[in-house]
Length: 453
Image (cartoon, rainbow, N blue to C red; front, side):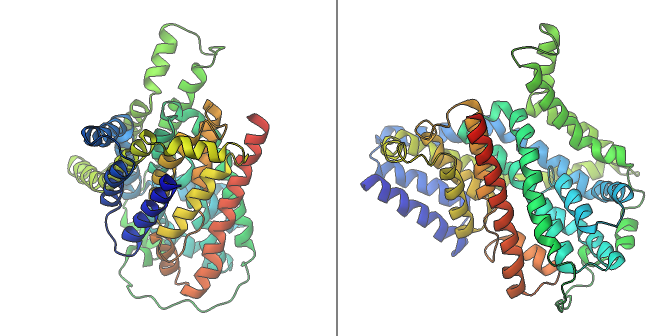
């Protein structure tokens, strides 16, 4: 009972200091790790080494993956590639089904680009489609928001799923996470899409704009013009497709049947399909998007921006791993395992913990980092310690990290403010949409678990 009470106090403290007092999650998690070590009576000589070893190991395993993924996302955003991809999809799908078009665009763009940034870049496209089709702003906003959110929490190389995979111990098989995460994210996005369709004819008064000079307030044609000559759709999609194809190909090559052969072929595919190497190839493909006379200067500037963006995520991920390592070294693991083993909750445990933390403190990434650290020691007692069980656990954490987005989440404010949706309306619609899509994602994961485990 003492161990569980300590855990509860620490989790509440993490939520309190990050959500109410705006303390850095990195400091909160490191502080919680050290306090937990003393509370659980871990030998004082082992406290520092437990924290630093876990932190360093995590950075070594996924630090470069997160950094290179962020670099690709920044180039896609700054080069106009996201707009080029959107244009290509509109040409294929047209404007007959505006919600579907926006959901699909969001689904693809958010694989390498953060959902917040994706919404800012695509908001003018959403407005143009809204005006062209006569569908309500509320419907198109929900469709784009949920499409972006689906892959943001379910599909690597987004940092949240990467961090969860590392903590749970399945980071060496990202191909399987991607292969299962993509269709689960489709279900999640479709749930948001169906919910968005309820508001196709909705009428309400948007809030007035406060900054007409903001990039998100530009007319769509003005935004396109601001990028100059846009990259071709083929080049725009290439930085996303290259690493995904390489990672998945390596996973297939390692199957017992060795469909691509053995020996040198297997070694080569295994090497280039290693996530960090695959993302380097993706980054090289992304450099083809740079144009103009200042390619090198633009590249350096964007890489510096990527480092600034990735640094807090890397620190939070490492701190979450340190917190998890301390918990794993304590008696808490045995107590929780004994308590949960007979309940048959399985995948519901990571989902519910992630949902509780997401709702309480707002950040999906922090929710995934903290939850995966908490549940990793319990996987055996939950019957989820097989390779497939760990993959589904990562996806269950991702599903929970969507439930729900509200006033303590920056994404809630990005969507509501750029779409000029009143706060009370946003609570009734945007928050509900994230609850629906997260629940739909978990239902899909639970069904997969029931069939495959």
